[in-house]
Length: 386
Ligand code: MUC
Ligand code: MG
Image (tube, rainbow, N blue to C red; front, side, top):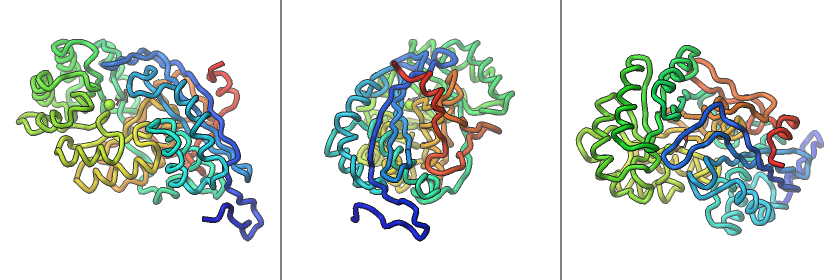
């Protein structure tokens, strides 16, 4: 491959060489405590990656965490250290449109570190898109939709507050599907909470549940049919990520609602293992798991080939990370379960000039080149970790 492209007919500088990579830790408070089975957050932490190309174009990407290295093994501190010491040097000088080569170089420089790699790769797509005036979606096959249905997650743990919160979202026509986080308390208490929510929201909302690996197979076998009876349409990762065989056994039991694989699918090989085990009905796609936009497409392709539904997952990204997800989600031929990129709405503030648009139960694909959003420097200074 040539190291640089010739100037185009208009003499525009098209030297796509990656000249600089910077990373910044950002902390943004959330509007309320968000409780999962294994962590609880009142602020979201991100690593913002900024790349500069020789032609002057800049690109941004974001890596999200949930409660430090609790949801997965990466923390923002570790991501920043590994980007600065290993991933940035691996891609410096490379042509930014050599996305696969960048992935190969990053894989050679560091095992896993998928969220950190995703942020770097996103910034490359953004910079190349901005150079050519194209949305990242165009570089990924082209958008087939310009908005995606978006759910909201109820995770305060207080059912009265959760009914009220869901009511506000319904009234504002922002969200009508709600994902409820369970597993932070004992299963009987969660079943009572779910019954309360199902009754209060009956006929007005669709419910899904995410246990974030909290239950063992026995508890899951008891709770899953109860959730199905309450009308819950999808249950996400009830058992630990390692227990794909257990997930398959649960799926084969009568009365089990459709199952969504999350923490057990990080790459296309994991996806294939879930397919071979017949362990899931749908898979949650996330940049932090799949190491980038191309990784999302690879996992999605394996799932699609097996007839497994696609669900647009998140890790409470800001508009930067959410926009990147929407760029790739917009290119998937089927996205049966919509997405959960409500992250921008649970933050007390943002660090982009124009946050994503949420209306009529959908989040809109931003227009504009690259990932479609731009950093607001003042706001970034406000949220950047000193
Ligand atoms: C997860 O496990 O799905 C996404 C939304 C949310 O509330 O938690 C995350 C992570
Ligand atoms: Mg999940």
